[in-house]
Image (cartoon, rainbow, N blue to C red; front, side, top):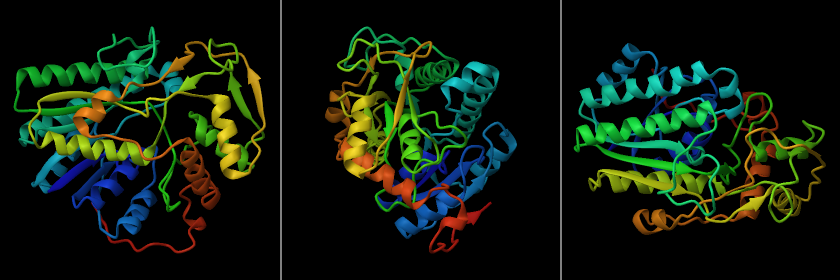
Amino acid sequence: MKVLITGGAGYIGSHACVEFLSAGYNLSVIDNLSNSKVEALRRVEKIANKSITFHKVDLLDYDALENVFKIEYDIGGVIHFAGLKAVGESLSVPLKYYQNNITGTVNLCALMNKYNIKNLVFSSSATVYGNPIKTPITEDFPLHVTNPYGQTKLTIETMLKDLYKSDPAWNISILRYFNTVGAHKSGLIGEDPRGTPNNLMPYITQVAIGKRDRLIVFGNDFATKDGTGIRDYIHVMDLAQGHLNAFKMLLTSPGLIVHNLGTGTGHSVLDMIQVFEKATGKVVPYTIMKRRDGDIGECYANVLKAKTELGFTVKNELYEMCEDSWRWQKNNPDGYEVKNIKEHPRKPFSDN
């Protein structure tokens, strides 16, 4: 069976490609490369020893997107990662986020409907829970967002629920995941942020390798064990496995399903620094600054539903997440810049 992955050259998308290829699926990837590099797909092919069909297409370009569906006539389902994802940026340019994330998804679903492809896994986010009244967070918590990025995720979730109500032939998995960290154990693929990292782990690794002087910790006055924010960090390969499990469940026609993907355990910022230093032997200097507007103290998942229904279990603890993140950073100090590849992999995929 062929699976279409949007945003497949990105951080989470590329790791999901490894899992799907390893499970025997054929892959076609759509990515506009606005925040990713095609080099990631070449490395995925090297890891899996299988080829990928790549289409450089923007989901906002309806005609170009439809050409993909005309060519890839045997698609069994879609994994939808493509979208802008920086919370801070979404506050500055909200219209860009609404247009890109929501309109792109409308185009995708319209063409899936037209070509009778009705299995969809959607990459949502724990941001749809806003500032939860308690933890751990279950899937039936009230949904409330605090930024435009989160609003795009929530709007798309609502749209997909309406789509399913209008046509129960759809099978849709909505995956709300928490804080993704780590990298493939080969060290060939990982998180390659452009500019200043928006997430904690790549900021830590860039400090450790000397690209940045010190880590800024925003707030040490939260009502947590050490005053710093607590989050649920999940290894990107565990997250990728969750998408594979969800897709397999769609093939049994479950209708519309919603699951949290996390570990079920919260760790503070200082926890992360301490475990990273232990796992790598590197010192991460940091400075405490006041908390940012909108930051919440504690956010971690209840994952019982995913364990029960998807058979989802995590294999990597925080120590392994730190080890793998550092291996990627150490081996690729400039990310996917080709000049850093010791052995440039072949280029077997079809670049359409």
